[in-house]
Image 1 (cartoon, rainbow, N blue to C red):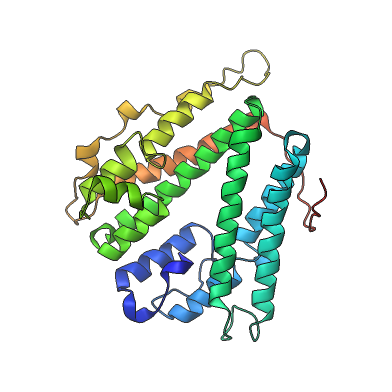
Image 2 (cartoon, rainbow, N blue to C red):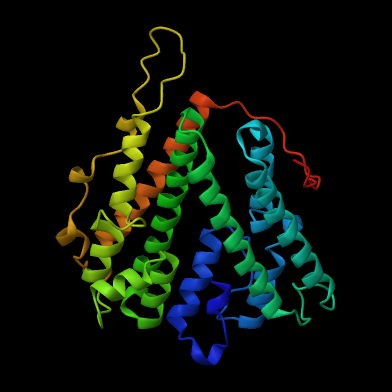
Length: 314
């Protein structure tokens, strides 16, 4: 999203509104933070300042620190390269953000000037590191219960995040604006696939087909949900006292066949908005929260997080 902010002159109001709501929905800025339409530059500087681990809310830096903490708990299951990449992702991004904030008068969150290309370069580098981490998980981890739970967790996060993206765009009416349409495809990492299948098109029915219905799209919501349901059925139930009667985890999710079809999702309400599509996204997000809580209660115990920097020793 930061890369989509260039200047107030080449962004229409719908794009600014949707970017502002996405930032709040993803927890990248606290409620009450300046919005892009009020002051684009103040909004951008606040967003950059909030990326750091010390920001005080669900920042990118804090998520990387949580990743390191979780990896520390299963260090014996990770290869040295996998482990070092996880540490490097946190430490490299933390160093970059510290340098950016230190180089801005008063810090990146005030009226000072920060090094925008340096921030975007740090985010691009982090994106490549996260892709390497994901690849290590897929190539080097034994396909046991731990790997299945990791797969499940990643899909829960993906369904919840992509549903949030789509909900914000559909609720704001942003799907009807070309700039927002292209931004949503980018967020779903589906631009090339969409343009190959639907050359020259920027209509909602084609978008819904690719981002929701199409089962072969690795970022399509219904395909993600179906694969998640299969994986939930492959993990062993935890030991529990007799008579607890816990519902099997796959039953926490509906089958794709019971969800709204393409025709229903493309219908517009009296206000011109895609009400069924918004409602579906809200339901999917709620399902993921409930499923995550249930898995956490069944399979995990939690301990406090250490906030110190972790070294790169194997």
